[in-house]
Length: 302
Length: 271
Image (cartoon, rainbow over all chains, first blue to last red; front, side, top):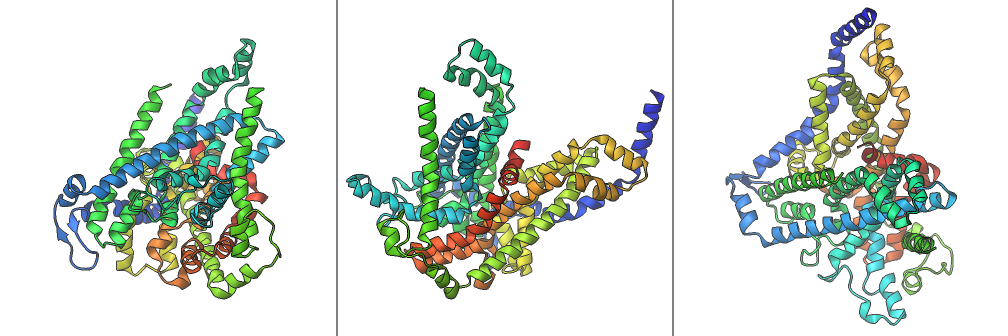
């Protein structure tokens, strides 16, 4: 007992004595991170209060940018709606499919491994490559989807997928789900493999059907994993800039524009840097609100 | 029985959804535009490397490729070095400072770096860092630090405490413990993180788009946007560019599937 306390106190002293080394080890990362992440986040707040084309002297306008955003900017309202719709459907479809495939492929067999490898494959491609592939598939004149539909005599279903205001956002949602479902499936598989086999055996003895097993064992036991998947998918859908920019650049008529593409356009097409910064602030607030809300919902569920 | 049938239908459907487009791109890179539009799934009438030859002759794809290699390599290497040091410090500093450091980096996980495009662009224009590789590399490092710190800290925390204690009783300095105990033991975690960072940096479009305008400095994803404009609806050329940009990743994926899957889900699984 006394030996143990002596050892810990001695140990604490030796660790205490050389903490400086640990501080030095964190210094490079922290310096760079402060300079290119923390400081820019704060500058955003300063720029958001300015009217500035990025070249001439900026003009301090107080909260005018935020006032305009909230009351007099139909585009921003539309884009916020797009972003929420995009996020909502991606979360729903991607999580459902990922969980479905994970339950199908949770057992390690040769076939499972093949499907897992295949479903995960899109994850390693770049958004730009994925965009190029789907630009071809969706192409109204030459695309594989429309030529197939026309050959099958289903001409009326052959739409201008990415070019029409009614379908463009959904076409991109489909691609995003195609792109990332495999990754979420793998996270689910890791989660499902932690569920004790006895629970399923007990359910089997009780004569539970597949669906009952899923409802009373898999679903409740997988809730913590679902929380992770939903949070990850949400952040991912806020980061979908690359995919949207490479497919439609936000068009047609801004129906596929999301917050990041709008910020980019406000700054680099319209040269309204202050206004773009205030849009960035709104995006930060949105992310905090939505992830906070999700955490609440998923935590009270189990 | 119903279960088995629906299972096979669902799995086959999604498989085709991935296999068909991938095959079209692979075959398309050996075909003419007409063949692609006419029958995208048919084998090429004549297997030629004409498209690849034309892509090499036409533009800077080799330069873009080299740029991507340079930017990705240095971004990943430096991030790993910086992140492993700070993660080790966070795991060993069992005081307020350690916790504050962790929270600071966790903030970067919650707020995507994309909200910083305006300040970063303005800052880099002021400092003359646009159109430079070191500027782009620095931005990449900062964008990937939070997730790396997150993965590595949880790994260093899981290493048995006795290991550190024995070493410190022997009088080894923190740097020594880091170099000769922590780093060798954390090779799997470092490997997983490296793959994760590699895929992110190689595929990124936003930051190159923000910072690079000179065509001789463009990375592959950025250059591909130009190809799309240049070749307009010539999908044979676009498919060839997709092949060139994806081949390194696909080869690595097929060679080390397990590490890839582990690496690309490490952040989420650990959370």
